[in-house]
Length: 298
Image (cartoon, rainbow, N blue to C red; front, top):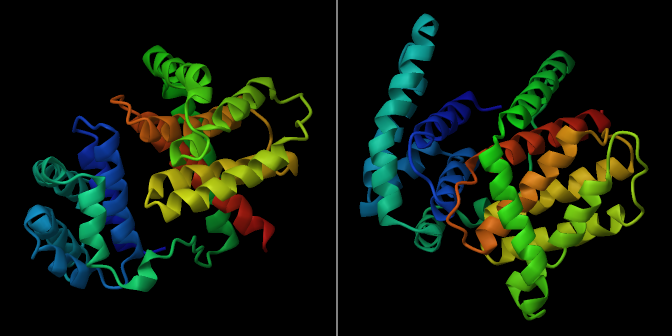
């Protein structure tokens, strides 16, 4: 695991938590974090970003953080305070960037910065010790539970608005459109999740829907929607783990898969609703699934 990349991405996440985010802004931030995580040479990519008006200010701040981490002598006793300072100093520049770009223009811009091979989406699990795996799995499990407990009544109301609306309108879209293809399985998967509990049998159709979501992940990626692709992949893997009984069908698990569904609907339908909590929960669940995959391959 590249600690410098993780530090920078966490700084962006913490800073953006102080901003009012809609779905387009969340998409841009996800792409920015993807650029950092997939960069083969962060400083070189940041230097290129400095040459672009919309990205220059945030690139300068991120370069300062990178220099601090890679060149300076880190005082670990003050690491938390420094992290808070770095995150705070990013808020203004992130907001400035988000005011100047949208997902389309940002993708067009970074496509000119990233080498072609960097555009290929792949999950890379770096070797870690068994103890590190166990500790991180336990941490992710607890974090997943905490996120589940943090969803308020307001969030539940948003969930009903997003999913119920799609149940009513699903058949109104042409079947040959990207939007219809992506939204078509949402109603059925949501219904399956409502039936699953820790004592229930897993419905046979779960495997088929796992394949559908995997195909839609590829379709989303082909259309430039990285967040949609990620959410579909998480759902696909979560469903197959449920079928294979390598994942307990607990409420936390079903609600995490539902969080992915909500993000998909919100992004596709361009809902002006804050889905940050759902996206955070989905990403944590995705990391949890990666740990399961790593353990299975040992």
